[in-house]
Image (cartoon, rainbow over all chains, first blue to last red):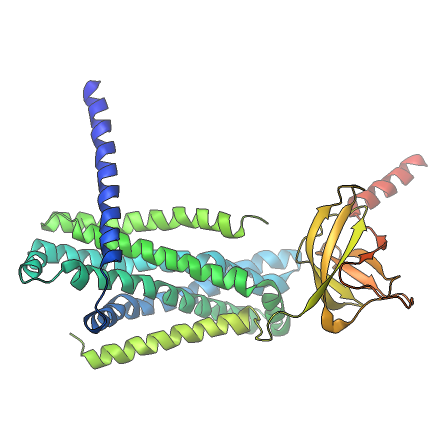
Length: 260
Length: 153
């Protein structure tokens, strides 16, 4: 009985310790003021790794999710004779929810895991300590560019995802299912508000990008310096990022769209 | 390792694609216009029943949109529903005996306010109240009346 109580206590302490370490780590990243001349090429390189290399999976997923959404929506709306609302359904569900969330999940899986594995391996092979030895701050050199690259790339990926999904959905609806193109777009424009839907979607994706990037760099930096440690850190990155994105999405949705 | 130059070029293309996506979403999908907000003036009207009229509902004259509902509340004195609406200034001003009626788009569609202009010389200006109003037609009440009528016979 006492053992169990102790185990619970230890688990709780471990939990708070890692939350505290992660927060301090974030503070260190945010406080590391970059020197523009050195930081910009590093950031660009990471934008390439983190953002551009994730583009293909984002575009393909967006296209297919948009098309499936249109097909599913059509078969349900057709029962009530309201297929004109199909454009609204696809556009609003993409801009408000699916765009930021699915991009966030894919981003955590595609880029977050790679960041964790890379930094974890640097730690395991003592590259980070070597950097420190020669007087280079590993936070500024290694961690910070990856964090900011994630922060900036996520909204751009989500915007591209949304656009591809909405146009994919429109293609299926108008060209394949025969929904009237004029009323499809008119209803969409009527229902989608720029400040409410587009901007809130972008804010969401900034938040998810920061969250996923933070978890990824922290897990990599904090990984046990051995193959198993890196493996479990990579798994944790994907699991924690996904859970955090889904949980935070509920809160953000309640704040942004909850009042009607 | 990819060369620095191709990294720069491809990240640049990525940025351009994202900006393009944003513009498409803003102008094609959400119908944003760069005209800025249209100047408006405010009218109020009190109704016995607004059913489920909401803020941002359309205000129209002969089916043409002339403004938006900004607030649906309760007048503390008369305990009737008070609806504030913003009318686009470029539409012009309405005569004093304008009638405001709450109507439904289609059988089960959204509620909106329909204004029909009268012939009075006096005009309604910012902050004025439309006194002549017609409440929303509530389908359930209507069905209730029909049922009661048939029940009586």
